[in-house]
Image (cartoon, rainbow, N blue to C red; front, side):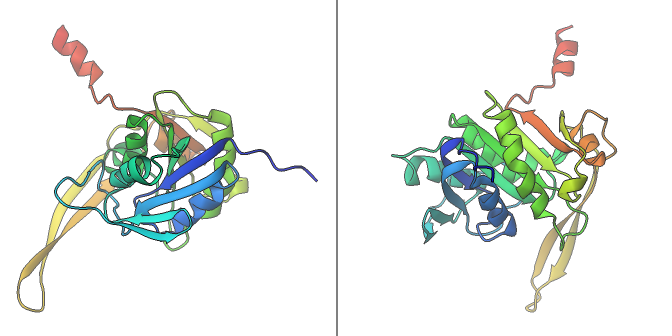
Length: 254
């Protein structure tokens, strides 16, 4: 019988944007447990999908202990990272931060407003290596969490702690044995998006509104995150903070 592989990290901090009770967090705990001697969870109390890099500057945050090494925060994913690093684990800092496992891929333009990715970027800004992990799906009720669970350890042991970068890892919507490989990719350019507002009235006659978003990410070139998922590959994309449009910069400079 093969001996278990030793953990890579003494302590890992886990967060997400779907909320501490989301199935993706349970999946992430299972996936990271072989990688770290201690697994700590500091995650939003409620779903914070789509909040990007928002931080709470105009109101207090409450920290709710949900069990051993498990804490819910009444804030955003980025808030959770700050609370985790500067408060809960202030005297025993983690070696790495994992954010996810997100229900749905974070690829193309979705990276920009993903709370999952933004939490990993906040960790990187605080000086720690970080992974953002997402599981693609076609059927929201049947997300293949086991694909990400079974594949994450090998990804982390292969790529380790990439310097000055967050690794955005997206698992394809296939069974683990159907994964075609691992692709090092770039972020796909934006597709098209239709934004709208659905207006309704409550039982007292007061109006309220829902934002309506319909995304069409496009096909994506073969070397992009979208292209990798299309080929049933795991996409690994290094992302950072530089938002400069270098092509336009060069044109403006002449």
